[in-house]
Length: 516
Image: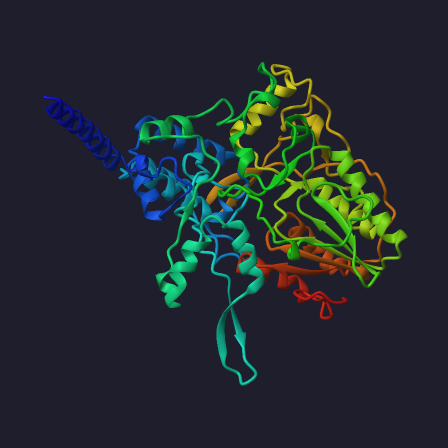
């Protein structure tokens, strides 16, 4: 009888284990739960098992459609002007309406469709991000295959593929817990046999599909915006979008006071661990702060400003740091300056303009405005917001609303009064066959800390990513002020746009770091 009891207990336990395994196999999300590295197809299976919620889908499309009413370039992007025409030809509003009536096999398919549609705008400031998928695993967009290959030309002209030692060292440190798998797979030297792997990102723990959705996909207070007049204060509200902004964390009050233009990336930023031999060894000079680091190269005449972002938690401290860094380089007898803004996602709009101004000094092209000089889309909702403000129906004592006229000055640098309906009259335009409206010219002024040029313009070199805030600022300065610019990667159309400016200056250097 004892034997039979033990057999019965063992049988029950075995059935329990089999049932658990069966449940796990039936739930693709349970298969990847608790793991750090998994096969991309396993993540795809989890995502594809999540069905569309019709109510959520309608809400998503409504929010996107209404948000696009404030996006400046919607009608321009239907068929962008030269030289962007071949790259940007997306009627996003028409596509969104089509998706509203489309039946998708899974919620993930809906996400992929929306993501690709917004990406076709080629606009890093107008992006669809679903934190349910975009902040967990690098799957449909980027998976890891850290094989650092380079193509080298031999003296006889033949080319061979090599593994770059420095890049391999980086991969070995960053992927220390998975590198052996790729090493073992490379035994036959057949690159096509190497597997892609997905690594878990910032995620709340889950055990199956239902807990995955509950812990990582549910909307939070700040998902669709923040009520700056609500209690508790906006600073305490989670802002999911902040995770995808290529900038340091910035207090909400600073964001509202100093306007930002920041690229969004559907893969959150992460730090890559560098081997000691690849860590920069030059000491930072005075004025270096957070994302802005100043160095003097070994030639003792070339200063470097490595500017990872135009954002900072303290706006004035950021500007003062830039100024102090430039003075420090000059005090060390630097006569040349390299401004490295590769992978700079943007930030304070006025700070980018101001940096150019303090380097070259006040010029006819920067006076009277030292800041933003532009126009904005003048849609029905925007007009209604301004009318409510100027009529006194809406109180905005802390200037939290961007449409508050007290934020802006007119094209003659005269501040708008609190009761100035500055969106009237709208400038009517027809863009790609669609009726649209924009405001009159207006600006955002900047308090000038210093207008003394720190470097002669012939000494300035800028390295930037095509399409970045600094790159766009470089366009006029490259031609009007002999500011040499080297732009890395990016969109071919934007690179062509950059070159078109240089053609007007035969001796200007468009894509090399040398004297103008």
